[in-house]
Image 1: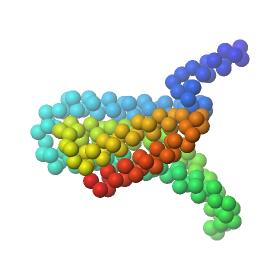
Image 2: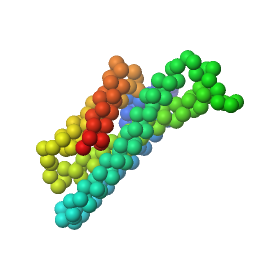
Image 3: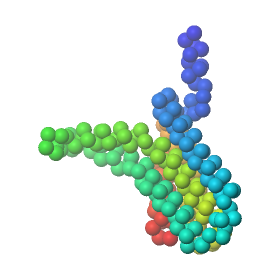
Length: 194
């Protein structure tokens, strides 16, 4: 009986990659939301393709840039996990206090929040970026800095997501962090210098 319950626990989507069942359930929910968002976007583009094609390009560009801005905020929120945990490793935090509250206590609370929401926010932001990319290339791909930097940044998401999945079992050899920094630089260049 005990062996049957162990084999049942290992079944399911991402069961072999994410050991914590609560975390796996949360991530599965956000994967469903992300795929639902992408399906809705594909359906919207299919139904309103003629109107999108005839819309003034400035207004159209403003629409897909809005999605890029939303994704930018989401990725910055997801990336906030790194500086918070870097600050938490500082041994001098034990002595820092703000009134009666220790700074380390506040950082531990914030650390738990960003740890829990890092993957769901990153997944949603990835879905919004894919929506942004689809709308951006729908009216034609241009060989300019904006489009090329955006495509390079979007392609940088693929290995980052894969290594993020391997990160749950600590089998990424710190590549998730390295790829996150590369993606951050590429994304920052695209968002701010285009």
